[in-house]
Image (cartoon, rainbow, N blue to C red; front, side, top):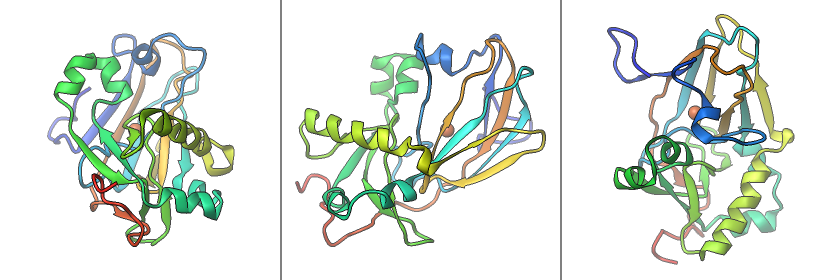
Length: 224
Ligand SMILES: [Fe+2]
């Protein structure tokens, strides 16, 4: 991790090699890996249009980035289920799955930045509702009991992974991908060989505070 000389932390370097490790190193042994998320939603204002580009790709190939549309995921739900979600909000914390794996649970919780956002937000430009789930950062529905929250989020996290809503970017020299964090989630695909170098840079401007898609039935957190 680091920043190019002469720039500030606005440029986030995403880097893996033989010493830095990658997602597999971070999450430990599994049969398969994905880490669907929206970047850094634990602050009141959330990231908006994001630029991500490649400096160096693994020599043996792989290291794609997968995207899924949270707008399309919302639209695929039945009107009855959509109405069920509209009043709900999610608790977002920087003590994410990846951060706990990186620094340990105690430190991650102590240093956590946290906030609450509506589960269904209205995109400030398109006006379209978006299913604002974030499997690594937002793992609790406000006002529900733990089992209820877990069951609902398990379904929604599976739902957004559908190939119906997704695409996969195969990075090539000079590729720059631009997406909106408020309407798409993404995941690294850590299928390249251990020790190979993958070097990316991300520019992450922050947008507005997310607004509920249906304010007339949205329940402010704590009011449930
Ligand atoms: Fe990310």
